[in-house]
Amino acid sequence: MTHHEIEKLIVTRFLKYVRYDTQSDRRIEETPSTPGQWELAKVLRDELLGLGLKDVKIDEHCYLIARLPASAGKESAPCVGFLAHLDTAGDVSGKDVKPQYIEDYDGGKIELAGGLCLDPRDEPDLAAQKGGAIIHSDGTTLLGADNKAGIAEIMAAVEYLVTNPQIQHGQVEIIFTPDEETGKGLPDFPMSEIKSAACYTVDGGPVGEIESECFNAYKADIEFQGKVIHIGTARGALANAALMAASFALLLPRSESPEATDGYYGYYCPMEIAGSLDNASLEVYLRDFDSDGMKRRLEALDIFAKTVEAQFPGGRVIVKTQPQYYNMKAKIDEKPDVLEKLKQAMNSLSLEWRLKPIRGGTDGSRLTEMGIPTPNIFTGGRNFHSRLEWASVREMCAACKVIIRLVQ
Image (cartoon, rainbow, N blue to C red; front, side, top):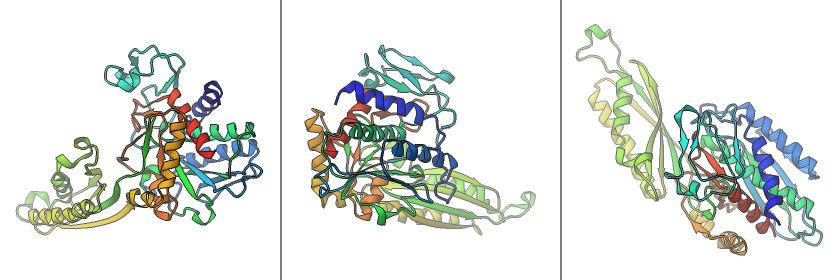
């Protein structure tokens, strides 16, 4: 497989896919949460059909599942799947994305809109791309490499396999999912239709990174019921729900926040706060690699609730928690061959690999929990969910080659 062939397949697709506004909305329970995800799913379906795949389907919840048939004589080989998500994060606008393709990056500072810039002095990974091709946001929106880089890499691999029938392989399953960024965890996923013995999400970062463990994730919806009276006569009688919510948020330890932690350290993250004197709400994400650590965090929320109630007599705090996904490490460890094949594929391409914990989760976390071991592969993207997002074309090509080699 030549680098030029792979690069052309990836870049054309990626520049097309990022222009679809597929931001998901975690406030909407319906799956998918936004119509743009349907639009991209239908484009991908039509492209797969155009490549000659006949087993292609989008279900009523926007899960796209397609299969590339096995080569003659390879029908009994185990089916392997590759998964990427359709949506982009809601943290920064993903509407009217204007990708900037630099075919021969000179290694200098890149000025973006709004006074932002990509500076290789601050980003060694960017400096390392000198002389190669990169794609970045213009600074007004995110780029969408999370996870359209993964989609483009999977689609390019499928086209390469279709146009190079001499490459022998078993059945390949292609899975594109909605609403990964909302943390819903594959609701209504058509598990009974999945044929993969093993799967790989293509949803990581720098070249060489392999991820087989992730956070345990919970969401807490906390309601604050105040005790309202005219604020002119409120002394000793008012319990201000808006202030209760703010007080609760300030009890979350700053040393255990996303901006203060890395590696294997977990955190609390207040995502949204709203309310009035009478009623207020606070949404908090909890993350921890260790189940005992998560138990401690959940118990701490109840302690914080009692503390706030003591500070605001007559007020009430109601904490409701729900799991979003679990650490996939234990279940992947039960089937080490899945990770070993990924390492072998990268070794065969002379790519240095390294295991890294995901400070987040993927749909692979949930799929692993359902019984299909699903490690995560790099995509070549950086600065996800931000206006400074960029991707290395060389590393995107490397991810595509890993997919092709895994299939073999």
